[in-house]
Length: 285
Ligand SMILES: Cc1ncc(COP(=O)(O)O)c(C=O)c1O
Image (cartoon, rainbow, N blue to C red; front, side):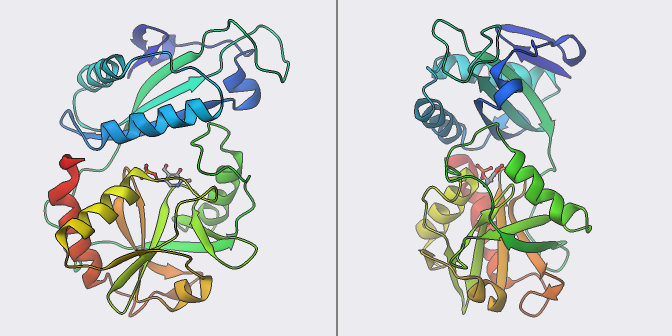
């Protein structure tokens, strides 16, 4: 793999970063991943905006312009064969040469880019052949700034491991009030009587770009009603369908929650329609 590090492209084995980098010492940084198919990116502007908001919210000046980010993404895709790729960017607060909590002054952020292989898009979403996911649920024990796409991912890693260690695909989480927040690497949607609902955006969840594309494309299409509101775990357990969204899975149907079938245990009709709408609209974002 060819990666980008601080202005240069190089084979991944040649990319090295100091252990004094605050990304390593503190997880002090922001990252983002944009899906790209044959060199065509989905929602790149939205991903860059979220990255810029994240950098602002933790006081790191964005080291590159939109055009420069675009150029790096294009180069990374080309140099790695323009396949189905997640274009991964990470910016840390940099390396001051010592371990000290306070923000350093006059230190350049570290900028890293690489690619992650992702699955191709299904040609036509078909609920009869789509494989569903198994998830477990648990209380959300992460920090209170989940809207920031921080590289300090230990909370998410520990929650993901809870499902991974029992051969499940994702852990979905709820707050102390029993309200759905999100998954360890995804946003969560439910369907009840044909109406789609997902938690409102606040500090408890990441503003997922796939969440945004799913909601806005369904609203533009007009055939599926979507609500952003508080969703309780009781509703999740009784839902006809559960979906998770993220940039590599787009909208993925969940067929099992905590060992129990979701709805009738089959991939739902609303998922099939929503995914068809998403596929048709994804490059408009
Ligand atoms: C915690 C969390 N929530 C939600 C998402 C989905 O975000 P997106 O749709 O932008 O990939 C992710 C993506 O990795 C995530 O890590």
